[in-house]
Length: 356
Image (cartoon, rainbow, N blue to C red; front, side):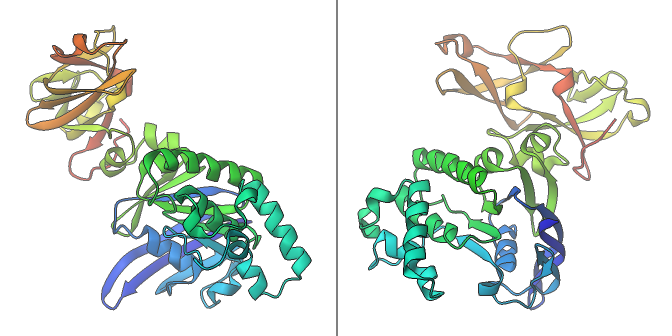
């Protein structure tokens, strides 16, 4: 039985529709990440699942039970917010236990739950501290602890790491994933950060303008994006996209021939977008590669690799290259070599991936 099912979910504010008929099945114990740019409807969708936003049309169910008309407190979900929402006058133990005391749980059981959760989240030594005495990561763990003690059917995370610095976000991502593996609770996580989506998710839901663009595992979406939006959103840096035309030998990009490992057949003359991942190119020619001349603007060293910022026919491009301990050999790069099997082709008009 699915953990969370959304069928034809619509959210409208008066005449303005912001979520357009979403259909999504989240399996029991699955970790699903909703990702997309600001304003795409991902947080609104999460809030409809939680009951914090009314569903305009469609049906939401949690573990087989329709929850459209059920109050948030009765949906058996726990939500972790971006701003932690901790009570500043209560210590860590009392913040974690607050919901349990509201439910009038026996004191001995509350103390047991606090102890277990504190051990899981490595908060035992901080139980008597106030939120102001904690780091951002510790406060976020307290917020998660308050959700965990409820033993909900579903965890809902609304951009919980946005207020943390880069190093702490990396640490907390790993903690959240380990926590999910340990507890096995159905989890839906909202973020605009595609790195969080790639590292955390069993499956990713890419949203844009209130619609779902594609659903799949992180590597499915990375290797086979359904359209130019997904190709340009997932990946760091994202996929390079160049306008071209299909011919008998592959794809032509303004006079440059790019080999493809497929038969063009009836698609000759079709206007396309040629997609090339930054990490897929090489600096040396191979048996099945195509040379793509570029105008190098900037070499950005990152340690073991560097980003080559370039232009081609007025289009900004980014490629990755190994430094081998130095960037001196990269300053004179005038072309990159593109393996035929890694090139992606999209229809120029619709933006949809073409399966030739």
